[in-house]
Amino acid sequence: MTTLAATHPSHRDSAAFRAESLRIGGERVRRERTLDVFNPYTNERVGTVPLASVDDVREAFRIGHAYRSTLSRYERASILQRACALLRARADEGAAIITMESGLCKKDALYEIGRVADVLTFGATEALRDDGQVFSCDLTAHGKKRKVITLREPLLGVISAITPFNHPMNQVAHKVVPSIATNNRMVLKPSEKVPLSAFYLADILYEAGLPPEMFQVVTGDPREIADELITNAQVDLVTFTGGVAIGKYIAAKAGYRRIVLELGGNDPLIVMEDADLDRASDLAVQGSYKNSGQRCTAVKRMLVHKDVASEFTERVVEKTRRWKHGDPADASNDMGTVIDEAAARRFELLVDEAVALGARLLVGNRREGALYSPTVLDNVRPEMTVVREETFGPVSPIIRFGSIDEAIAISNGTAYGLSSGICTDRMDYATRFANELKVGTVNVWEVPGYRIELTPFGGIKDSGLGYKEGVQEAIKSFTNGKTFTMPWG
Image (cartoon, rainbow, N blue to C red; front, side):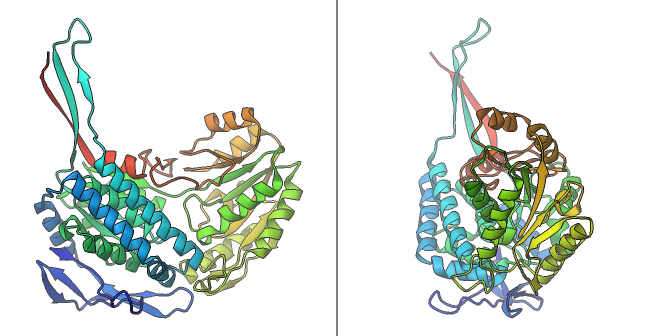
């Protein structure tokens, strides 16, 4: 088998990783080309992983394609259950790795470990679920005394999965767990910025009994290996989570194969004039700054009715000032860094541009390396870049509106259509938003990002092709349907 996996100390030792080799056909081969992983807060090297070549990727697909899993439903569920137990027992260690390579604060990293455990739990449950349906055929004058039974089978080829830097372990879990539950084979390329979390989860799955041929991890320069991940003849499905430009490139390049794209978002939190402003401002702050604002479903725009905008803004500023940010390893901090200094510089520039065009900076826009402070902007207009495009960081732009018609128009006025949060107690408002917002999710009295790991998740327009993630929906995408008929009665 081919597994580009980081070797690491025992679970009792340091969380730092170093790897300069890969396993091919069960033998360890020295790797000359490597990729360094850095801590965004300290700029220290915290790991070294192999830099895969195109030939390495092809070998991984060859091995995956040649393997056919015979694991029963019970065996697949048991592997996922054991992996869940192992991960929960090592939650602090797993969270330390997430924090170390991504800069996410300890609170967010521990929360992510819990979410990964949820994915494993739901995957185990779904592996046991009978996915077939039975149809009687003698329902019309044209029918016969027969039964039709539906089946779901693994794909003939390999699943190619590509994951981004945010949620470095949970994004991986949402790809691999449905693949395991359905007896598929997957080759994963995690973001080159956060590969250690993917290796950590892979090692736990192997320890839980997963045949390594069912899940291989390759790390490398996307400029070198991305096309092979998309176009290899042994790939049946490409599942990608990440930016719009790359998603559209995959769609154009993939050819005659299934693709599932979960792309960016520009999600609004809409606050109506009847809203409880304390509750709404809590949601605004949490939705903007959790995970350092690096979520496709983070609150990217706050659309606030003009009658309550001033009071709402005061509350958001007050709560933003209390949101502690700094050293990600400090358990008292609410937010760590963003993924790197380049990202922080981009947020700084976008905010400066908005201020130059008339927005008011109320708090924040301070940067030190990859550390960027929670930021509130008022008097933002919909055409400003900070809200027209996706600002993937801890920035809270406030846009004022005068009617529900205007709120809906502003919300729908971007290229994205992922999710939304609504703050109102009026059912007529909630119903209109549910019916008229061009998004994949409408959450009333919740942040746009709210979901559980089982439920359908995904967007439309530039946020995706309408296919959904979430364990149940991914299982549908990761399988082929077949019908079996027989005489009956």
